[in-house]
Image (cartoon, rainbow, N blue to C red; front, side, top):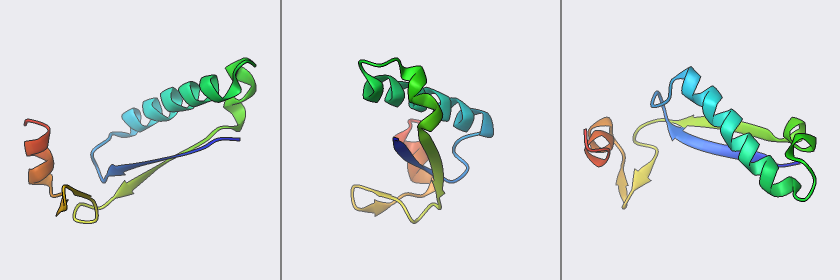
Length: 76
């Protein structure tokens, strides 16, 4: 029974995008892990959680991520 844990910065994903991510990631993990059985046998038993992390509690390159840094990294 797979357990998928995804961490994202707080308020960077809409509820709709979270639902989409949970569905897609669950589908892919179940497909890979269930082989050669069909993924449909494992999907109902695949857990997926998205945890939101506060800005400043998450870093890249040794620097705490701020909204401004995230915007710069994403090219916005």
